[in-house]
Image 1 (cartoon, one colour):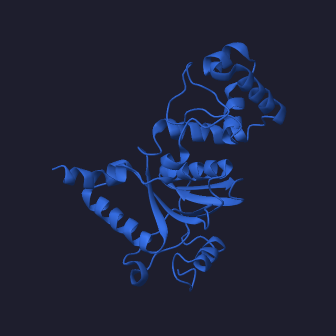
Image 2: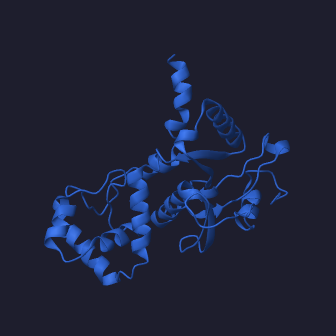
Image 3: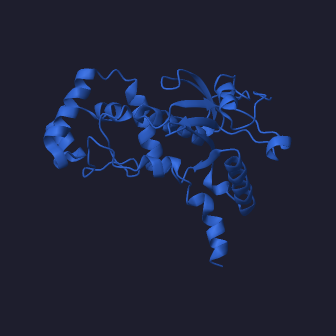
Length: 253
């Protein structure tokens, strides 16, 4: 289904896509391998995603919205055409990142790392080149990078804690404790010297009031800080080293 008569990648095309219905209807029960239908506060609507990896991508997109890195997003945004793009694909997300002087459009697909065969890598390289011609950046997220197991776990726990009834006073209490402790604000100290539970930590982290290192599992040494401990732009919005690994392997052969 064509959602716009304007040139793909143009501002008018993007406006049409962001204001259109989903380009495909996902079917099936809500299992990890099938459709997830859930309400997203950040996206302001109910969202349909397919599979566990795509669900975690949706949580990462929500988190980046909370952090201010993304200003518009559309799930199941469009289908490419053979005439205009050379092949038919259904990207998982289209989102817009604020820019100076103009915003940047990103097309996101989510794949399982184990299915990235050389043939699939070739296709991905072609997609990236074609989207670049159209003024858009193409991202591939997998369950290895950037959605490693620690990242997936933290995103899901943060999202759940955000709707668990944590009060603003509890979050402010945590923020004050982190500020007072400075570099001594660790999970071990948090567990020993406060009466707050981890839901408070995760709820505050979901909104960007405090930060933990997303790429590492929690331990008593985990630092809790008032500023990000991860480079979110490189981590989520940069081109994945994994997606280029096949080309690098050929170059080194």
